[in-house]
Image: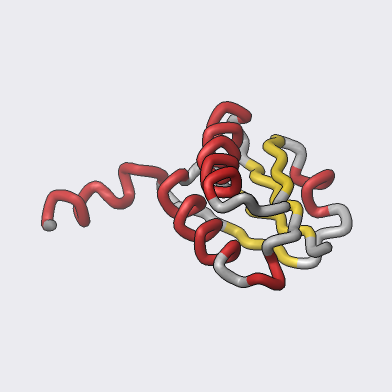
Length: 98
């Protein structure tokens, strides 16, 4: 049973898309996915979105939301680091150009 730690999972769109990709692999469907963010509310939202997907497809995947990076990394088989340097201000020019 793999354990996957998603650090910086408060980026809901990216976290949801990545979770969808991860769960498309039968070998990873019986995983525990830890959603980690500095803000617990953001980690919980990413977890809730994943839980909807898991319930919809009746998968055995387990999830947790936490701000405790060390606990999430303990025993992790896979670690995904999702960071956005500079926050949302850094991508504002990209949005304006689009």
